[in-house]
Structure formats: structure tokens, C-alpha cells
Image 1 (cartoon, rainbow, N blue to C red):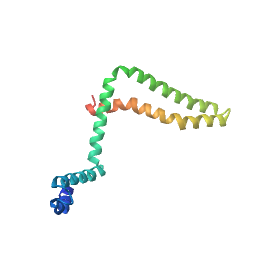
Image 2: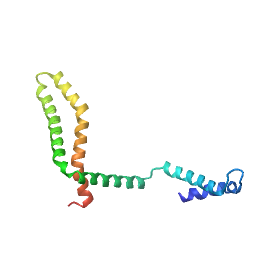
Image 3: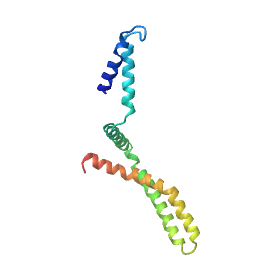
Image 4: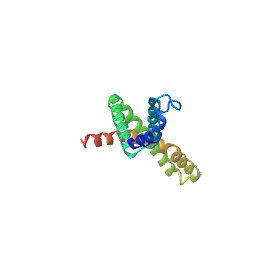
Length: 139
């Protein structure tokens, strides 16, 4: 970032002394700073991604800690969602010998709609425990 600022300041330095183009050197400096900030924000580096991810994990764990009283409700929601999904899959398997079209319909509907919901519930419910153990060092 410092390199960009030096290059832009060097290129536009003759203009900063001209009172006709820009009122003062301060306006030029603020214009250069804005340009450099825009260039810096245009690129999202791996380091910035890692910092952002660690902040997100911290906020998520803080949220889970403050809502600890709702763990029973989360567990029940996860269990019932998974049970419903598994029931429909088993139902499709059992119905297949009697009516393959109906079995195919139930299985495809379950796969297309409930799969993503069940995946989100599993990630949210079990992901919290995985994040806690990885953040606290396998306690």
C-alpha cells in the first residue's frame, strides 16, 4: 500500500503545487489517499480472508455461548430434522417394490429439498462443537 502511495504522489506531485488545478496540497493528498484506499480495497488477500474468518468464528462462538440456554432446543430441532429426512429416505426404499414411481418421487423430493436443510442443521449443530474443540485445543 505504501508503494502505491509513493508512486501516485510522485506522479501527481507537480499538480499539488498548482493552485489552479487543486486548491491546495491537502486536497491532492486526500485525493491520493482515497485512490490508494480504493486500490487496497479492490484486492482481498488470503491474509485478510484469514483475519475475517477468525473474527467470524469468534463471533459465532460468542453467540453460541450467550445462547447456551437454547442448546436443548437446538438439539431437538436437529434430531427431528434428521429423523424426518431419514424417515422419508427409508419410506422411499420400502415403497419401491410396490410403487417405483411414487418411491422415486419421494426420494427426489427429499433429495432436492430436505438435503440442504438437513445439511445446514448438521453443520450448525455439530459445527459448533468442532469449532469449540479446535479453538480451545481439544478440551
